[in-house]
Amino acid sequence: MTTHPPSIEKLVDELNSEVTALMQDSAQTVHEHTEQLRTQVQKVREKTQDYIQQEPVKAVLIAAAAGAALVLLTSWLSQRVK
Image 1 (tube, rainbow, N blue to C red):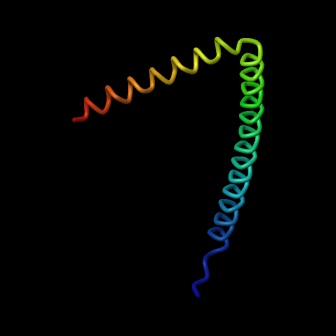
Image 2: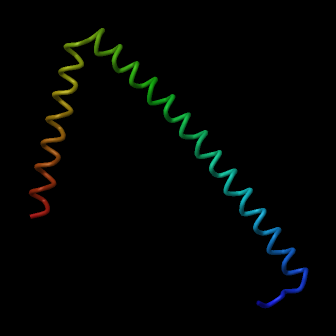
């Protein structure tokens, strides 16, 4: 096994520490953003459920229109590819 001068070993140790700290910070940031996203999704879900309960006819008409738009878009895209 090759021995390296102490300065290189020290540099490698410092880099290893920095990389480890960066990975931990990144993991923490991802966790925080995931929790924020979950909270936002829950709020949207609750608002959607409230809207459906308050305006059931409008909700069904909106869903039907969205479905029809998706069918038309899919049909148009499949014809365009041919």
